[in-house]
Length: 391
Image (cartoon, rainbow, N blue to C red):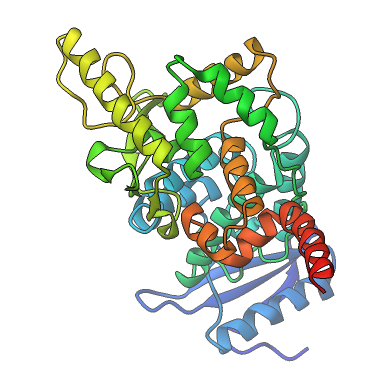
């Protein structure tokens, strides 16, 4: 057999009887490195060797990376991710890395990852991914985790740490559209009657008559509320309350509430206020001022606070809201369902979909139409019936 040229590699059996090849890898900043390849047969080793030699000749060869997935994700979070994503997104990514990936596939070296490993990981998360209870993560959470992993490993590809992204061909569970929960007109009237005099009244009314998200309501400051008269009043949504977490020196997570940008750039918007809501907000402000005065506290810049003037925790509000519904025998619905109720009433009243989309802070009219298809489908029949009567 002809002898291979320098760097072309050689194949032989080692002392254990395994087929082995050794290749000389050129180095820019030092002497060549030796790369060993193993296989069950001579042909298997030869095939692997020829692939690597071809990569060397075409300048596409990448040294196998010894960095683990967990180590790389920590580096990526700190050096690349933190400077380009919102804080809320960063906190979610940090949770995925430290609580879902670290002790599962986090120990794999980047060069050892493949689509099969990734597919098994996401399948397992879909089946048993919840941390504090049984069951799997939602398709939305799994998609978010996949998006994060894909971004991080794309960066590893660009930095020549790995040849290709192992998440490219993973199949994720389909997102099933959940049933839209909202109040009927009668249920809405019963809720408003039950709210009278309750401390939850004003924030619930604001959700019912503006469609604001819960975090946006509790992130609202008085300086963004403009009431020239009950007939000309509006507010600006520019921030929201969100829960964040810090990792202490001993590795434990500590959560806290803080104001941040709203969900998307489209969420920054102006919402006109109905005369009834403008009037109730004016009354509420006077009541709030009296409360702080009676308790020797300075007036808060926030529209809604705890009794001590602190930010309202959306989780506590959600809990108290559900208890109020239960006490009054009302239809069970979460706070976000109040936003859906507003949108449903708006469409039923004939509001232009584009106007509604702007008020809700949606990215497009198409998204609004898709989200509230249950209403628009009913309206089609009503409008066709009206056209028939006209003709």
